[in-house]
Structure formats: C-alpha cells, structure tokens
Length: 386
Ligand code: PHB
Image (cartoon, rainbow, N blue to C red):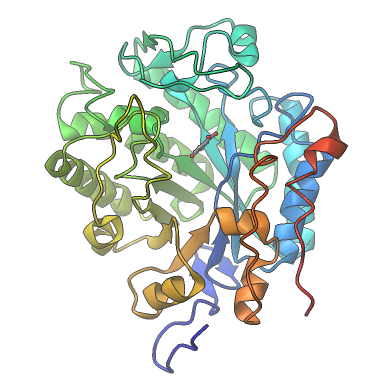
C-alpha cells in the first residue's frame, strides 16, 4: 500500500482512545459467527478466534454482537452476557486477547423485533418478542428454521425506561469479564435502531414521534453505560443508510435524525462513534426491493463528530482506509469480512502482504454442533509468513 506522506497520519500510528492506546487504527469489526455452543456461553473456539486476531496485530477488536438478555435471542448460538457463566466465558476471551497485547470491546446487543417466538432461547425466556411498536419487520430468515418463516408482530414495549437497567447490568457484567470498553449496537435494524427509525417506531409518548424522542432510547442507553464505564470507554455503532432488517426512512429524515443523534452522542465525549457506510450487503432485497437509503454516510456525519474519535466501516480496502485516516476524515477503520479471512489483517497491511479474500461462505455461520466442526471457516484461516 502507498506510504503516507510525512505530515499526514498513518493508519499504523498509535491512537489514544481515552485511557487506552491502540497500537494502530486497523480494527476488527463485530461479526456474528454463531458458534457459542452448546448455547450462548463463549467456549474454547471463541477464545482461540479472538486470540488469533489479537496476535494478528489489530489495534482494537470488537466482539461479535453479545446479547444482553435471553429475550431477543435470534440465533441459538449467539453469545450472551446476562449470567455468571457468560462472564466466566468472556473472561477467558479477554485474558487471551490481553496476553497477546490486544484490546477488546464487547458489543452489547438487543435484537428487539427481529427475534422469533419459536427461537429456542426466546421460548426459554418466557417473554414476548418486544419492540418499540407492534410493527412486524418484513423478511425473516432464521438459521435454525428452513425457508423464510417471517417475523411475527412484536409486542410494543410498555415503558422503554424499564429496558435501560438491562443494558446497564450487561455493562456491569462486561466490566467484570475484563473488556476494555463496550460498544452499543445501534445499527442494522436492532433495538436501538428500531427506536431511531420512524418506520419501526410509531410511539406517541416521549420515546417516539419527534427526532428528539426517537433518539432518546439510544442516548439513555449510552448514559447508562457511561455510569458504569465512564464515557471514554463507551462507543456506539450506527448504520444510517442500511436497510438491513427492514429499516429505512426518506433521505431528508435520515439526515436529520442521524445528524441530531450523532451530535448528541458526541456531546457525551464517547471513546468513538463507528459509522457504517451504505453497502448493498447491508441493504438486502426484501420482498423484491431494497429499503435502505444510499447516501454518503461518512461525508454527512463524520464532520459532526468533534469530541469522540470517529471510525468507519464497510467495504474499505487498505488504501482507501489509509487515505481516509491520512486526510483526517477518520481516526480508524474497522474491517469485517477481511478480518474473518485474515486473522493477521493488520500485520498483512503493514508488511504489504497479500490479503486473503477467499471467504468460506458455506461455514460462515457454522455447520454442525461439535467444536471441531465449528472451527471450519472460523479458526482455520491462513496466517501469512513474515
Ligand atoms: C446477523 O446475525 O446476521 C447480524 C448480527 C448483527 C449485525 C448484522 C448481522 O450487526
């Protein structure tokens, strides 16, 4: 890759994020891998997965999305953080990452309306599928049910304030598990996003309607996490253009909503705000159409971020990422798919090694129930020779 000129910032330069110093600005993005068998508790192959990526030189690793409670478990083997057992499982992950000199944030997740009443963990939770409003998402493909059974109409949350302590407890648990910080999953059509978007939030109380009201839930979640961690170890991920999970508002409303939310989130002096660019991957076709709102996500919102660090995500090449950091548009970039197929992505970039783009799509979300089967397409990607 081209080397940055002397008075610009290199993507390989360290970055101070609150009390942490990242060794570079190449991050591992959160990626759902659905491998916490027997169910929801991080296991030895999860430990190895994150250890490999810390050894591979990433400046910061974000975990796959971690469920804050059993209700809303869309996939049966996505990990959680609501119990002591989860905390002990995650401790092994954070210890392995730290032993390799890495840093790791836990991404906290509630899926809201895109769970299914027949999902095994949802049944165990003994609660309905909750959402801001009783509005069903179109689509609905579940990795454990054949075909496209569709989403069910969710139950509107009576008082959203009662959900904030659930986020707070997850943040307490994440701290006990030894993470370096926590990121709110505010993107891709999950609960925080469902509150922000006027198509999934049609509440008439203080949690819906105006932009300020729709932003309230995400901002209250951030404040609860800040109470536990301090703002300098709290982040949020947002995908203003993505139609994933049947989201989307007209362009002007999208710009107004996210400009407000990002400005308010930035005032909290977060560690960083991660902006996901529009991609067709993040805006799948549902019932024959894409719902997303293609626009220049980085250009529209990164300039509003003044007190927090700003990270980009989605579809970056090493060159494009280096240029965005060099010209000060971003402080760093997260890589998703490339971090799956290259455990040593940051090292490869730095040493000018070829990047492996050969992704094992068959085993992306895991096949089988044994740890051995689940390591395929997970922990068996090649590491370059240095
Ligand atoms: C997924 O499980 O498909 C998934 C989870 C979290 C995301 C995106 C996709 O942010």
